[in-house]
Image 1 (cartoon, helix red, strand yellow):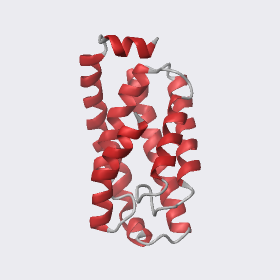
Image 2 (cartoon, helix red, strand yellow):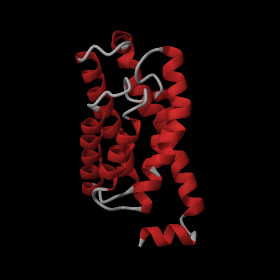
Image 3 (tube, rainbow, N blue to C red):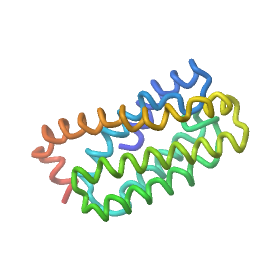
Image 4 (tube, rainbow, N blue to C red):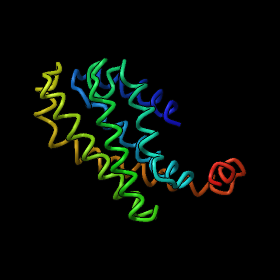
Length: 171
């Protein structure tokens, strides 16, 4: 699942980053994909550590790409793993309820965006000066647009939850 989401985000999100020249500007697209995946992954595999493992795999895949900053931007891995741990903790404490997934997504989005912005600006990655100017727009936009993905995930989940493969993965 991490590889599939990575490929989708790389193709469209990478194009957005390249077109604008601003790191993290692909959030207008990737937020929908991550919102959708939060619902589906969490409901299919409601276990502690799912999000940590998912974001570890995702960050290793995104390391040589422009997603999450410049290619080779090493803080991608610890930022995403810490974000995954926070998401797992949040989901654990809300008992993997649907409303809790919304909270986990907003925590995940805010912490992840702030951490990436901090390191991109600190390390003076090209385009980070432009990022600083629009960061106050990107974080709320990620949460608002990601909510579309969350509701889409609920719709998809309702259609696939009784499928045999989903039940096999869940058990």
